Amino acid sequence: MRLNLTCALAAVLLAASAPSYAQITVFRGRIVDPMRAAVAGARISALPERGGTAATIVSDETGGFALELDAGTYTLTVSSPGFADISRTVTVPGAAASAGEFVLQLASYTQSVEVAGKAGADGRINPSTKTPTPASSA
Image 1 (tube, one colour):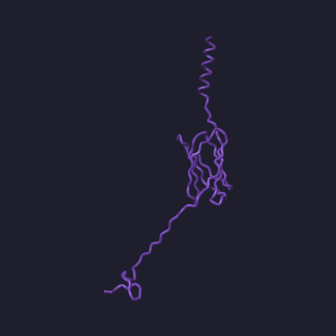
Image 2 (cartoon, rainbow, N blue to C red):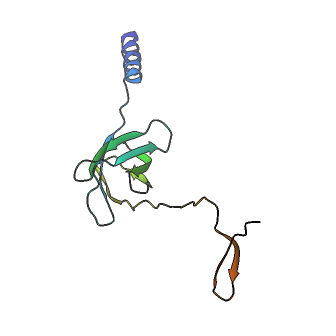
Image 3 (cartoon, rainbow, N blue to C red):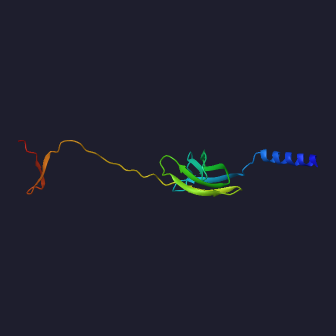
């Protein structure tokens, strides 16, 4: 009886000390531009919803990527120079999954021109010629 109890206790302790492995899923997708051309070198980050370190990878020459992730919910963010970043919340099941295509839109930009210098007129318009009045030299 004592031997059985010792064996049972040893089995419980051994099971409790064994590492638990989460199921790893290969999450695949493709990064494309608005014309559906591959975007090579795009950076894909998967941040776990429950916290922790983001997994990051770069898309290949076909725009494809494959991330090894534990099952769970992630925020996937894709970025590439010249394109607007895109984020999507995805749930990774316990088996192989596909994210489909991420279509990156062209980044918007603004441009401004600043002109500095002295104006050649005092801001009045000559009514007869419809031209600026020269600055007075008083």
